[in-house]
Image (cartoon, one colour):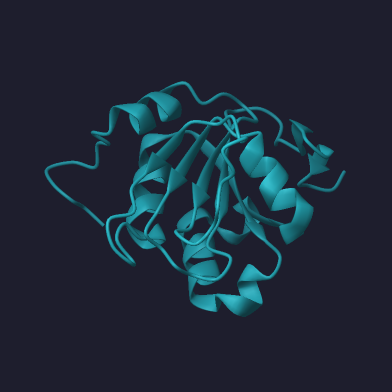
Length: 156
């Protein structure tokens, strides 16, 4: 989806996070319904304007096109409970670049260890997506140093 003459991101916080995203670091896309405790020490950019605005469908292609994203991580129940959103994530990144993890505690732990949280206006069930930074090297197999320890996202 093209929004103007190009697909640049003009939000300075998001653009800076993408530009400095390193291998294994995470930008977390949060749906509108999730509560993020004040104890979470991660910067939050709230893009929610109205229900469904900004949506995952609007945001993900922009982040993919402007950042070095190796992988998308979603909660295991997303495929069954939000099949259209799951299909969109797979279509955006490719099946080989989408990983599922247990909803609890893994998605919350990944969120709490991320570099940036971007809250959308999306009210999808399990509409949270973790985007893992990458580059031309071996795939990231773990999200490291979360509150529940290292979380394996790829098998050996």
